[in-house]
Amino acid sequence: MKFLPLARALALIVPVLLLGGAYASQYAGGLHPCEMCWWQRYPHMAAIVLALIAFAARGRPGVSAAFVALAALAIGASGGIGVFHAGVEYGWWQGLTACSTSPGGGSSADIMDRIMAAPITRCDVAPWSLFGISLAGYNGLLSLAAMVAILGLLSRKGATA
Image 1 (cartoon, one colour):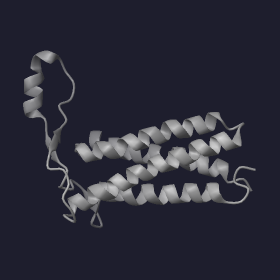
Image 2 (cartoon, one colour):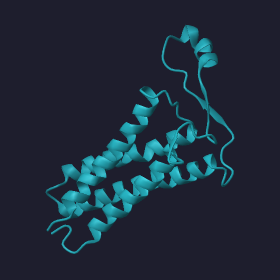
Image 3 (cartoon, helix red, strand yellow):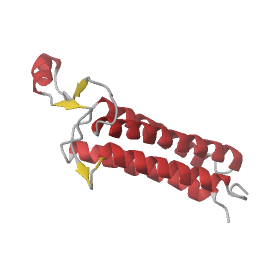
Image 4 (tube, helix red, strand yellow):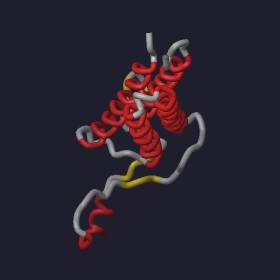
């Protein structure tokens, strides 16, 4: 059995779902991201691009596998940032003390009004949790598990055969 197609699919599906969840929580749930939340999103964006390149290189299994591995590492990077962010939220260690704002769109004439009305989002406060795990914690757990699964699939004998 070939494991590369499954690894390639996971390398695309996982960051799409996690990034989609982040944007849904922001725009539908009203949970404005802090600076570290944004840091978790960037590796997922990179992973999506890398996975798409892997799909484009399907005819060259070695090249495709290399891009899948890079996507897995990007997913893992997001997971590592998520674990760090969750630790900051839970008070396990010191993190950033800066806050971020989400001023939104509009004309430049009312930029000061938008800045003043923007919500301030702290990185050390979890705005939402389920079973005691924050969004950053879930991203950390799911992303690291996905990285291990993808790299595990790639390391299986015959993965690119």
